[in-house]
Length: 223
Image (cartoon, rainbow, N blue to C red; front, side, top):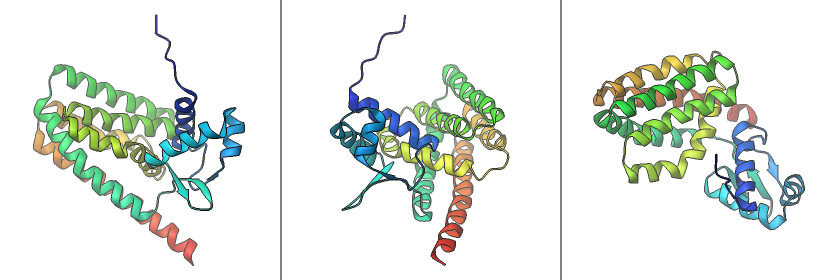
């Protein structure tokens, strides 16, 4: 029997709002008011305010002085910072994962890849993006490097938004499988240098595409 997990109202509010942001139910750049959210969630404004501060620390919402709160909307600069940081953290993580891979870790990674395959065939962008993120998260966990994991955790919610935004540019989501399979193969075979190179190239190439698209959008809005 599964144990009942008790959560405070604040924790539940954080979970609900985070899920709505990551799924796109709360749109990028959308203005958030404590009164409206409190009514929708049936909680106090204090509970909502606490939840928003948590999400602000995760980088998912922004507090604008004298204006209120808005959902994170990635800029070209945000995307550049995230993909360059990811390339550094995750390439090191992939290298460490390959160096330490064992049969249990290989099965875990292959299961994450299989989940990505299933998710992309479903055609749901949010589900595919979460499976993509879960695969990268698995690689970082298999690195078995606590301080590296701590640093990754600081930005992982923003990474989820980034992955969603990047996947939205892909007309055929099954290409996500082709992008990740060589990385998974390199890690499970213990090819550390190859894993380091492949994941860095993957993150960089997709990051450059997203940055270019965001720059185009920003130029149109500025015109």
